[in-house]
Image (cartoon, rainbow, N blue to C red; front, side, top):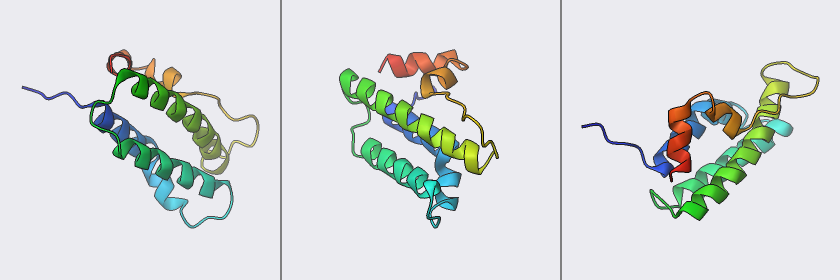
Amino acid sequence: MKREKSWKEFTIDSMRFDYGLHAELFADEHDDRRLFTNMYNQIMEAVECLPDNPPAFVCVAMNHKIDESRGTMDAILDRYVHGRWGEPAKIGLRQKMERWPGILSRIVAC
């Protein structure tokens, strides 16, 4: 039987998949990429200190904060990795998750 991931495991895996490599690559930079790394590290530390399935209001608050941070982190990636110097894409976590309906329902059900 397949075990479902807890909210904590899912969030950590999602952040590592989307931003982990870039956070490591940007660690020695001294511009906005440092902000990217610091935001990534703060989110990871905050999620790791929570229980596997925190209360629903904690999940909602953390998802909201992570969504805001992802918007900033995506803008930094657009500028430094994707080479877009115009208006950065403003796609938050919720818009990304709507592409995968099963994942969104698991986060909301937390």
